[in-house]
Length: 195
Ligand code: GLN
Image 1 (cartoon, rainbow, N blue to C red):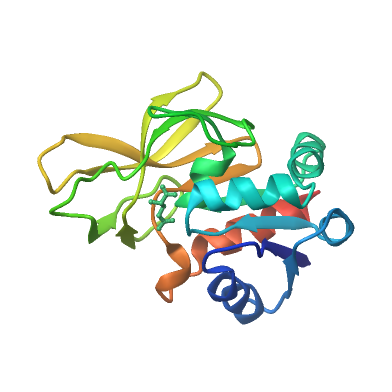
Image 2 (image 1 turned 30 degrees about the horizontal axis):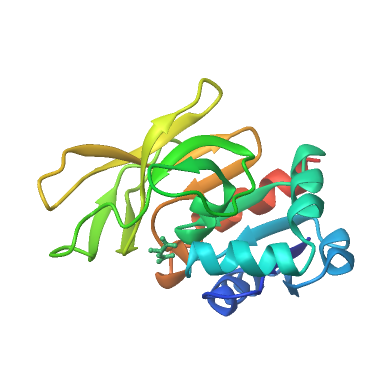
């Protein structure tokens, strides 16, 4: 499979390393032409406002929306999840609006901006070690969205969804590319192969 990673900002290289470790071809995506050539897309973590601003400048907003609407599988991690979502609890920013969730950015608070947790993810036999870095959580979930995992806020803010799926869109609040656990990337590639 040809798997693209949106390479405007953020940790796209780490995602490409996971894709290549699974024996597939990874591509950096910066133009609509490059996007047209891949079977699946990863949107990395980083800074969601920067990713949104650059995607607008590079003319990628509608081409990405169209490919996802046509069934291309996509995995968004952290800022990538924010970029896929339909809104945030804060001020407006450029978002694709293809994933029917509202996210709260930097939700885990100052004292615990970064932490790790072992998550039970629906469909995975063993727990997944999850690295959260100034991570969002999902504040509101639409009807077609399946919650695959939640985490208890170590800062005392309760239990919140952090892995969701809507059709072929997968999104995580954390960074699966920063551990050696490639199971979510493998699911993305399976979805591409099933098509
Ligand atoms: N805090 C970032 C944002 O709101 C996301 C952080 C990340 O991707 N690790 O865009």
